[in-house]
Picture: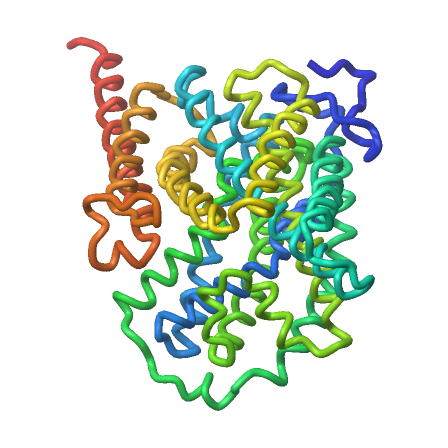
Length: 460
């Protein structure tokens, strides 16, 4: 526990010593605007351009595409809502989760969360390494050879992992700086795309199918944006003063994520007609680089690298907290070393041995998401309280929902037996798992409350 004299969290250059223990009111600081910038920078990723192009590839009209993106990114309001327990209890998400999943059951969920965050942390390093290597190649004429790729990976990892190592205070300060500088730079780079947009084709495109077009597009937007963050929300609210209202906190987190995510996805939609291969490009960074004017090439690569690293920092920090919740008893700062060994090893394999391995790796992360959506269904019911909690009920509902989600999801490494029709070309399986879990958990909870009320009633 923190003692009254240990204000470990206020100095950005002091390594955060706090792990899963609650943050007392004495050490709370910051405001809703700080939370806004954390989520803004964390989602300032040019990878969302590709998702916008994917939405466009479903054959939708401009207005249908905008609707799909709007509905999809609205899921970030759930992230804001899931952050409320952090401000109320001072606990990170995976520690609070133990209150309704139980200590042993929660360790399984925490391990799933760690694998998910570690995986995306690794994907970030790979993409950032390619971007940094390209910057060095264009700016200093270095060759795109193995030694320079390794150096680029090392530079990316140094920025990502060192900031996560210091912890919450430095992350908060860094994300705010990234939001100011690279938020503006992102807008300037996006302006470079404007001359290449086929406006007439975009506005005149007819409406596409709703069931097999709009619905899958919405589920994909949710899956690649809000769903990947569900186990992290309270990690960035636990230091906030308890005086901040629920409404302000939820709005700050939601809008902080929605603005950059939605803007970049809409840009991807507008550009999707001019670059139809963007949705399926093996190296979208290189593809988009061909459309850049000379003045925008280096800024574009910088935005790509630093923007995606800002999200990777959050992944690395929260993955450490998930590892602690999974039962690993080491200081929080040392969890970054565990992540470094695994993520750097996987990154080197992709960069130097098999680039195709990245496709299988991302497919594995898609399967991990099948386990996250059912967890979110249970977690959302316990944001405000954990009365009448039953770990067995939570784990049962989660397991059934996860099975449904896996059975209705298709990836390149595994396809569930029920992943047919619309399920095969969408992320609808996650939604199926979410709603099945929610229904089972709420119905079982209602029966529990009725039994409790009957047992507590006085006899006539």
